[in-house]
Image (cartoon, rainbow, N blue to C red):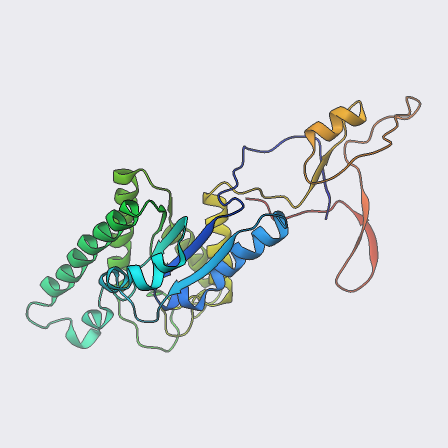
Length: 290
């Protein structure tokens, strides 16, 4: 797809370069892998000549302390240049928020103990990764959907705990000067929008925990946006000369550009586009933008 523009967009960055080895580490949400598969596909389409290797470092049911225990044998084993960390969904100990336990003596203390242990363990994990000379990218936990009216057990309070974990992750990013991808705000907003017309809607699964396809797609999009990734497959700027047009364009090759002073310039070039139905129409092509 070629995008025809008359203006340039914000500065972008390519997070991973040729030779990089990237481990996405976490629990079952990472083990499923759809969100980071979208990121890997992005690199395959935007930078097909870039040799980046991606590794699945997610294990179902894992917590931060478990990631520390398997660090050498399951994460650093891949000799990564980057480790992308997302953990927390199991660390908060979701059964502590079951409605049947809300009046249990000491339940609030148990909930806070779980979050405190999470904070200690994630900080230790980051220190170990940095000591191993690995570039670390942090991610806040994805959401637990406690607002959908769907018919499944709702452990209200879990996402409040995950939000607290997210605040800590962002503070950890500042402490160690690390990039942080914040999924909480984006996913909550998307869920809220979906639930304005259907109170049972959700971008996660019926278990309220694991992102469904739309959730993973949004997570991949948010990751790329946060990391200031190039939003275009290709774009073309038409300037006074072929050379100046090429210099202002990206991921395309311009040859034989000619100007006809007898005709006024159009503010937007149009090109035939084939729709999913197979019909051809003349419309400007659009791409997913951040």
